[in-house]
Length: 300
Image (cartoon, rainbow, N blue to C red; front, top):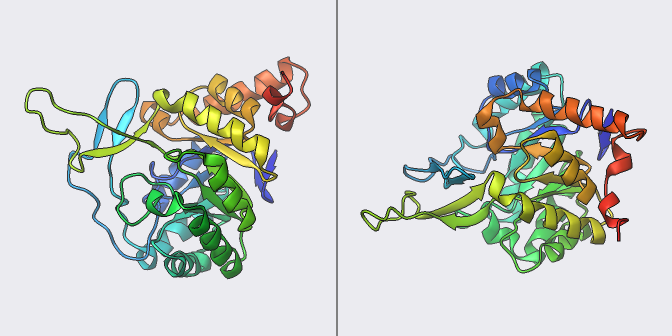
């Protein structure tokens, strides 16, 4: 049993935001496949249709997506969140976004009736104008938004960080000053693809965020740097497909891992990763998962 920000997890795998988190039923399905916790699709203050297609492409070594934060807005998502809470039997974290402190607070308060176990502040989406990384690259904004949400809700607050900055630690420290209970690192890395036959960018939004295998080294370095500077837990995300990936992320400093792109290969990924972690712990005479968190910092 893992415990992060007061939340008990049966295992340290968590469904990442934006993947199968648009309905209560899909979140319940992921939970039943072995996820230790689930994160919803990012929910905002107003309905958004998202960017025009194509909005996602498979590059072979990862995915490039520019969804544009499509969502029904918080009034219409409350019932879906309640279904996930009532039927999943695992912690449910509500991912929320906004362009201002007030918008973040409005969404958080609007979802409180459904009793999410925590809120994850999306200040890191790289392809939604006025939201996400547009806000999350400013440490003052990250701090003030975190303070505002912490003051407004009675639940742990996680802050999801963007790697598309000069120094992610500065943003992580801002979240910590604002009272964040944990940080999540990382969101996708800015990227694009071009059709060489036409010369046109392939994505409807022209550029998007890269996820999957290709970003794991970037995510590992970010987690490693954050662990060295922060006093709050880090949830690692980016390129986690196997239990070996998860162990590597935890040795860098992650207390748990989120799984996103790997879900496209099958929902059994959660049970596969969690059972692999358990075997590794037992075979190497560690007492519990926490024993391996951050040990790469000791190997100097």
